[in-house]
Length: 301
Image (cartoon, rainbow, N blue to C red; front, top):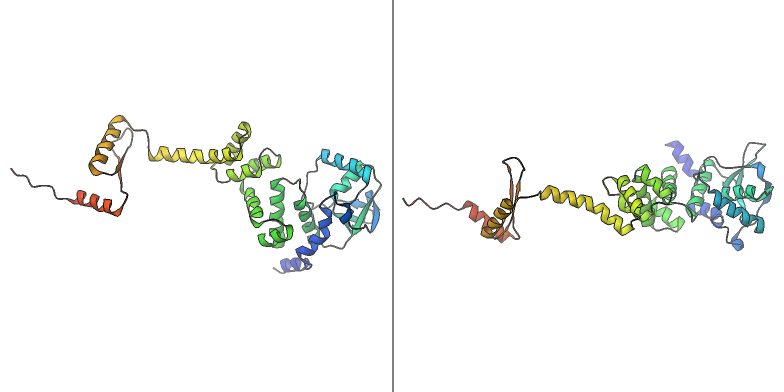
């Protein structure tokens, strides 16, 4: 418990303060809001954060950013912190994507802002930066929210306010983490949308239905109907098994005599089953009770 309290005190500036530091890291398209770099640092003197939540950097995206850097330079400085490694004295806090693209652009130095952060703060900023990026897939974003809540004790309300998201947006995304790994993989690959995935959460076998959705290229609405169909079909089969003509005729005769709906469910191949009489009001129930409890007339013979 003491360790957890000490870690949370290390975040004493609060999530909003960390957001202020990382806010300018969100976009490379806002040069006027970019802070001034403290200095330029040789690329080889900077190492990536080993706890970076994001593991996949698309080569095509990096090459596109590298072309932009060749033309305009790095608009948003990296945020780094000092390390004890004298050969590589700086570690990336935010901006690894720009650092990688700068290498492709064959830059020797990059602009950087030097800050002092604890390990916990570095992880939190890395998560925030990734969540704010527009190209995160739903699973990456949901995993980021989960990390912020589990690692730092943030609530959905705090995250919603600090990140400019609605609470329902955060809650709905985090529900996706309950899906099987196979379905989460389809989300990561862009084969399914978050809307498709939300519809599959309540399915008995989401992976099977996900493959069908992808194969048939179903819309979200079609996916929702697909999820409901197997359950409703199974329920109908359980409640109303296939009946022969004699059984249906007997149901009709009893219903006509009682003035109520009658269902006979006979177990195929056996002599047992059940008879269900449905009433619409308490008055009909009273009538049924009188019929069932009536004393038969005495034999006149």
